[in-house]
Image (cartoon, rainbow, N blue to C red):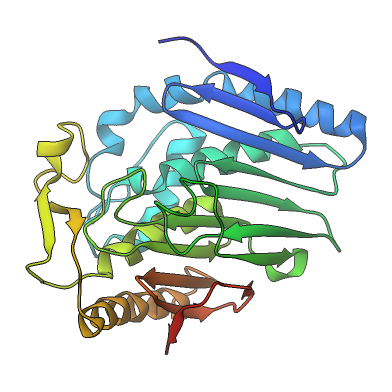
Length: 293
């Protein structure tokens, strides 16, 4: 495997890649400050994957009664993000993409004078906002026909005073396996790591027993998967409107619990032509879908 790679896209954004990690880094502000921020992000990124690999065995273990202790900053952030969610089966890996985005962003903006910026790690986004600034981010209601094909279903506007610095999306056709059947669950939280972990757990709860759903043991699809032999979704057939509604409301109930507990700021859940939201209601211009309550 090649070492860490850095390049620029046609928009001048910094692209960082190493193994399974692909980051898009974009900062706004004075040109000199932006370039310094990009240099800091690139410098920090050099050791990210090696640091995670060094603690990977423990990162794949479920979080139980004992708080997991780690050496690296990213692993520590992962542990903090999943700890409030430990009452269901979860490992720190549920927060890995968001935690990487958070820590690379923290390195990029340290001692820099910037207006705003973000780091996108495969759809899990860490956001930096200076006082008075805002950032518009696209959201998808269907991962395979949205994020994976470049299409957006709507947008969310984040302002500095909202306290939201992380966005993450999960679903059964996303990058990671899911126990549920959500097309997409997008979560807004204080950090990308928290959003990442919460989106995973909410997406797991968008679920129902139905013969139209095909499942397989996670470790039969990926021997290294942290879900072990738990049944993950591999195909979803034509569900009735009632089945879709029941599954979506199950996930919505869990999202509301996380909102009440202060773990998330808001969530949008979608399945088929149905959408449910809770918390911060800044997701605008969604395409034509039925909203549940």
